[in-house]
Image 1 (cartoon, rainbow, N blue to C red):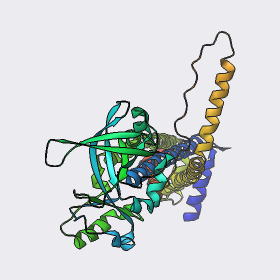
Image 2: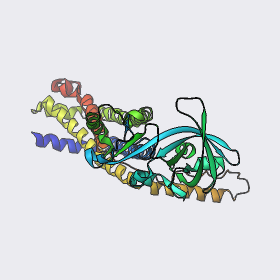
Image 3: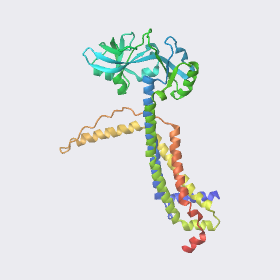
Length: 409
């Protein structure tokens, strides 16, 4: 029974009116494949940017877990290696007004940092690139973000003054620092508004411990374990500390998926109408099949199998093309940038053409991150949409009576 229904499914998929080739099914496979390829490429690039943002923010600024309300003399370096912890760094953030000797002023954040622990933090040193100079080694030394240093007009070896409010009073404290280096993170907000200085051993205010994990997705489990070990401490994970930013990224990804997934709806509607037209054209064949013993379920199986074949071919072709395009997206973009520059150089030579020069492409390397869950959701959505279109297209035709069809024809 399954053999003849499968045979007719293959026959109906690749033939039309006795001729080889079926334009409707071919267009359906091409449309679905392009939709899957586009969605996989868009989501992998978006995942790459999001994970790059999350990694940079956590490594440079927010850490994976923050521990507050722990006495300064309580050394938490013993946590290294426990609960998947990679490093523990003590720091304290201060908001102040930075003034150079040329009287340029700017508000910025000063982070007093345990430089010895930060020097062993590979992630921090990788994401915070020191452009000039060296890291601070004494209490009166500081490194500035490249944007902040440019605004103040300072370079390594210059002196700056940092004014901040004294804790518990309204008086200002002025501290002179020697600029020993200039760093860049690749993010304007940090390069323009951040600086790092040496955390004094006798620092009077409470410090925060920044915890880095081997796997930042295990922050909830680690935070729960730390809460048991330090019941009086205030423990905050990176999801909570940057909740507004990361929720915005999540919503952006969801809406991008919904927008691009409209391709599946369009393709499913086309498949529905194509199969419905095909059913009407083959209504005599279907009536004859029922007359010689075929059941309504067999008729439905023919078209459902046909839809399943369309989905399998499209998923295989679209997923392969999407993965291949994602892995070579930088080469593709470099090709189009080169093509744009070539066209500009050719057209600009024409006397009647007045073109503005093409702008620089900000990103030198586009990150790509694959999540198996996203690929499975895309393929499952494509499969469900095609099968639903196949079921709806043949639902009424499978219940027709052969005698009525033969009488009318």
